[in-house]
Amino acid sequence: MVSRAGRSRGCSNCRQRRVKCDENRPICNRCKKRNLTCDGPKDSTWISLHYGQPSLNRSYNSIPAELSFVAFEDGICVSYTRKHLMRGGCVEVACNLVQRIGLNGEVLDPGLSLLRDAILSLSAAFYGNQHRQRAIENRGYKTYGKVLGQLNAHLAQPQLQTTNETVMTAITCMIAEIFVPTGPNNFFKHVQGIEAILAARGPPNSPHGTDPSMLSGVRILCIVGAIAQQRPSIWAEEEWKSIPPLHVDEGSLIRHEILLILADSTVLRNGRNLASLNKPMEENYSRTIARAREYLTRLNTLYLRWKQHNSSMLGEEAYPNSQDPTMANHASATTYMLYNGACICLLRILSAHSSSTETLSLQSQQVAAALRIVKCLEMKAYEKREGSGESNTIGFVATKVAWETLGGFNSPGGRRLSRAVKAAANGVFAVGAWDEPDELPESRASLYATGNVRTSAPLVHEQSVMEAASSNYEAFELINVSEKNTVVDTVSFDRPRERHKAMGTPMSPSQIFVA
Image 1 (cartoon, rainbow, N blue to C red):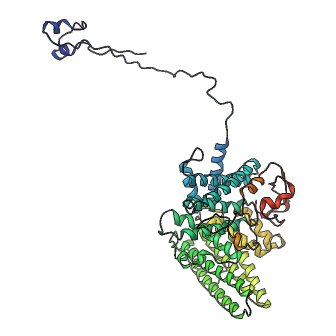
Image 2 (tube, one colour; image 1 turned 90 degrees about the vertical axis):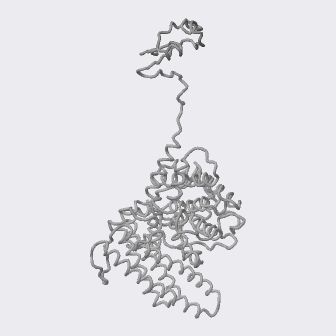
């Protein structure tokens, strides 16, 4: 310790006159002789400098006996899921909001709190599924069940029905039903619920801000979901079609126009259903076929634009007759997959309205488009995951459509697709997560709430999902695309015979996962 006193302790009068003060108290002799008011000598001020280590607190109760690693696991799960599933688009926007408020601790905003729980449930279920960590996966499903209950409660309150947080929570739940599904048709229920919320709030007013980013990734899923359900999507309405693309580079513009064609095709599928109820049907069929062929022509024009753009990025000349173009990058490969997936959807509509001889030709064209998707997955460009926010959802949709077209494991093309998906997509595509849906009655058209958002009772109940994560489970087969007829996963149930109650409908043996 080093101690040092002040330079002078005399009274203020003596110091001002610069004479020595005798420092008597309460008044010095000089001030007494001059009859001055004396404030007395200053007290000593000591400055202590301590070197070395601070003293240790030797309290034996300062460290808890047991530490919880749940918060640590949450951070790992979110980071992993964000890297493999959330790059760009609506879920990354949600993840950014959640990480700003923190993964743990109290949140006063009920919408943000629910959104955080949704992100944590998706992340835990996805991470646990990918790494065969059953405890983490089940924790994700339990949280997901609670999220569904809270989501329905929020949708019953008008002030919370159409907020960004509510929309992003619903989208996160829909993504969960794609990559870690709890039942074969739950994806479609979320799609219809999301469209009901979007219809209630209307299209975004500005091309900037959170809304366009939030909607960019969900559009393709809503459109293809509507095609599978043979109903028109809100994205076929002019006010939604007029929303500008999020990016204005050539590749993004081409993808945007392909999605516009797909949105219009949802009306064609609905027209087919209406036509089947009326006699005669010739006029309706003719109109549908003409529109479908018109859309195919527009698709071919967009393909030529894509080919020119892809070649310009490669620094090569575009050859119109080349059948196997080289992909310039991941974004270009994503556009190519979207184009072929759209072709298959339109060719299916034509097949449903054509004669038997024409149907064979149209089916062969569908197979050719599906094989082009396979070839695209096999190319090295698709392994470079630097693509846009739509890349995961577009890749999933294209793979799903190709898998159905090729007949799964029953064809060499399907087995080739399984190998390509495992190698290129790191197993994140759950190809059989949603099958052609059973018809959903109008009265049960949505998972979502009351009030302005039209619905009835929830279709996916939180209790059923929580039951699915019970520790007492019965294993049933989920086919790993890379290993035919191999049991690779289990889903938990409280009672073996209540699978249909927990999942909505029995999981079919053809439920296919890419692991």
